[in-house]
Length: 228
Image (cartoon, rainbow, N blue to C red; front, side, top):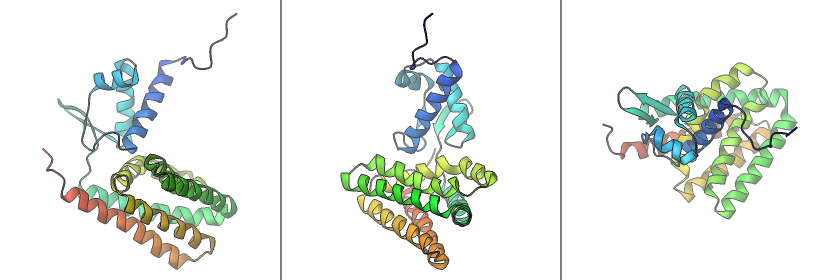
């Protein structure tokens, strides 16, 4: 009796899941532009699959806020307004700050150890010029806040906005080495303030870190071409 090869995809749903994750990561990594049209046929060719799993992936990513479906026009990468970014940053500051407090209360040693390893990965990516690797480590850093908070409702709430937040972060830091270096410095200082339980300093750093993201993206969007 033959056994299935480890690489064989047994069910169409598994294929749709793989396409969803690959497309999600491509959007976060900046492989597509904000507002860019997503042709099902083009994506099917890119991924080497039929249109069916692509269609399922687009539906899933629409729920996550990464894709916008416009009647009679098709599917597009989300294209946030300045007001949208302001709301995301406001939510992010509240959620990340409180998640850190919970993580330091419930699993401080594991949380800080994981943060340190991610900071090391960020430094290695920065020194080697691996922009994409740095962006992914940056996303992992902030996601780590929620991994140890012990509250599924908080985790679920953040998950709904996480991909959009990561994509906006890429928009700001990917094209600018100076921004990445400043970002890295702030990440190290945030981790150190947590280690010292210096909550006033932590709150100050978080407000500056998220606020700088908002100011930077506001500048980028303000000079972008007008939407149709």
